[in-house]
Length: 230
Image (cartoon, rainbow, N blue to C red; front, side, top):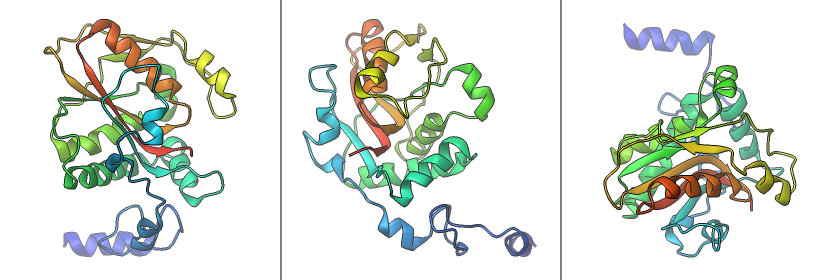
């Protein structure tokens, strides 16, 4: 009966790939197999000193940084990020977080992570959107690594303007003093995985990491995002 109901729902409300808009097969979720194979993966989790890590050099000390795929200006996967952030595709964020975590785990990376820390939204923006996409990604990663997601450690003091059309300098200026930390008890030398949807200049994640280290100076920080602007 459950399978019949699912088939009827798919008949009248077909599930479509978020990239190509073709109908998904029964065993596909959010993206069709063809589009998954076409994903412009970075494989940065296999490359120490990769370009994502270089964004943080001289700004904040990190253990590692990695991004799942390239955020290309004219690429189809740009639309995927837009759907996750603005079109209510929260489940897709969790799904992709889990897929990337599974690839990382298969390569034996990030095995010593203690906590997952999503970049927070300001409450005003959370109410508008209904969810925090970075938190959804973090829960997808948690589905694989089975580590707690700390949603109360970081908070956003101000509802900052969007970073989308800002210059590199303005992006850094826009992030100054924007985050704070709540008093959350952590062990000594915890390894925290900071999680965001897209990395462009690294300004947001640098600001988050700096705030965490002010309160927890023994913390070790790694970084993960779904996408990175090349």
